[in-house]
Length: 141
Image (cartoon, rainbow, N blue to C red; front, side):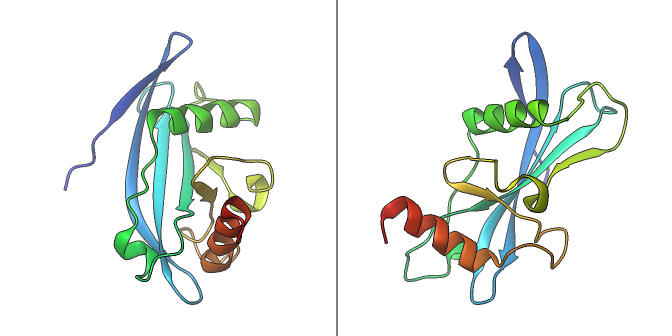
């Protein structure tokens, strides 16, 4: 399946982005995770990468089976603005600037999503506990 590239203009600059739907395992459940990759200086520029864990919770089925969370262009805009304020250099050639859970989760806010490091490896907080906690905080328990 071919991945669709999208474009977003911010302050006269064009950013190209794609979002790949994946699953990430928690201790007791699976969860939808969207790997977001963004380029601001062409295909050889430094890519911005954010693994966005959906905070969908409270269904009788596993969240990854029924979750339809997907970042909107407003979400992508918010990710870009945050990354630019925290060191991403879209004109730099090569490499990836990751928005990691370990480094950015405490400051990064995007309704419906949390940053996760679990797509890269076993590091990071348990997705099930983090999603349940975020859902409870948003919906009052």
